[in-house]
Image 1: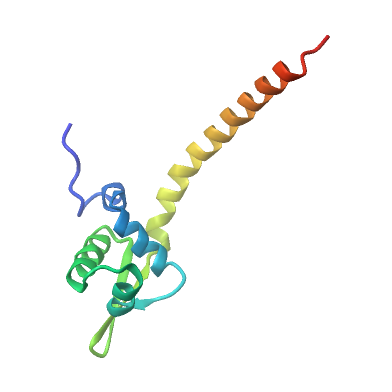
Image 2 (image 1 turned 45 degrees about the vertical axis):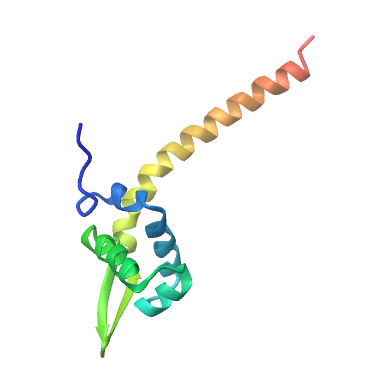
Length: 111
């Protein structure tokens, strides 16, 4: 089955590690491209490319402030990913509790 285009699929967009770093950096505050470049250590063209992909899947919003473009995360678009991953988090917590109980029962068998 072919993969969805990065520019149309949120999960493919965030599969790229640099984009996750950029999202982490933008999470607390709106930032300019220059600030993102300085923080993540990529070239300006590379950061702009990543920001464009994130904008295309609506994970990042942009606004013009004079000559600067300011970027911020779009929490509404991130929420469905968070909810999807949360289902797996609950599953793994249950699995880990079950493993822990088994391990404890082997160490302290009932007599």
